[in-house]
Image 1 (tube, rainbow, N blue to C red):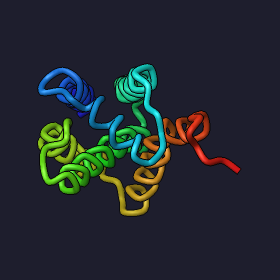
Image 2 (cartoon, rainbow, N blue to C red):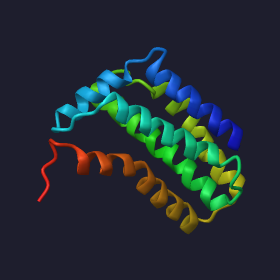
Image 3 (cartoon, helix red, strand yellow):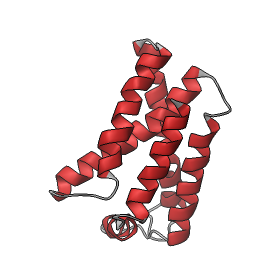
Image 4 (cartoon, rainbow, N blue to C red):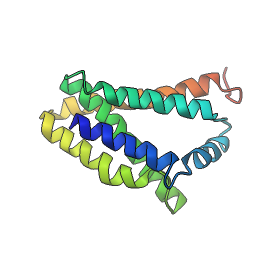
Length: 147
């Protein structure tokens, strides 16, 4: 499962940025509507951090850790699906989200035999990890409204 997760993540980033691509411009446009400026550097660092986290499941064999990382991709898939519904069309990354990330998440739950509480903990950790780059963006972005 860990190798499948890494391959799916690489394919997802490929779909977003290479073919068919277009994620960077659509995401930057989406974020500018809420007053946030996204730099190419931020996108690169965020995706490198993401791929590093995904790669770490090859070496850290703890099922709660693995499912927390898998939860990141599940939540990312939900966001891609939601954005595609909102935009009433394709949002870059949708296909790998639907056909790779969602099945990997379901298989992960089956494979690890987690109970409901453990799944909820992993989803919570995954949500926190997924939000980390956005929290940094909100804090550091000159357009942020901080008190």
